[in-house]
Length: 153
Image 1 (cartoon, rainbow, N blue to C red):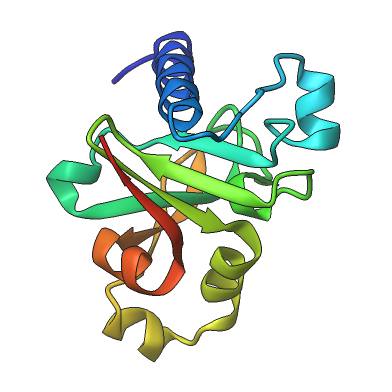
Image 2 (spheres, one colour):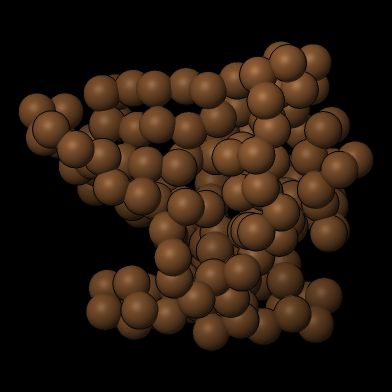
């Protein structure tokens, strides 16, 4: 298993890759680097939060985290990702071959507002680990119903 420092570095490299890809398409990402600005205003000046999913191609799904904790022994999870209230209103997730840009509010509505039958019928599944709670959503579902843009690299 990869340690936090390695995961963080992989995420930052992916964010840099996405910043270049978006800029080549006329979209400026402008990421905040301080924790203070990230917590108060979101991940970027443009309102886009970037997430790297290294298993997307392998599984055909994206993992959308909704809560996290830094250590398994902590009693409570805190809201994260699409459930964190910050200045982000767009959510981009992908790998080095493709990425999906989705509205954070619409994504959250699907995860919080749909019943178990709808979720099962569309291949959406809740996942929990000792440090993360989230959902797997098929890339095809996201592309058809949620994606504002589907970038291919």
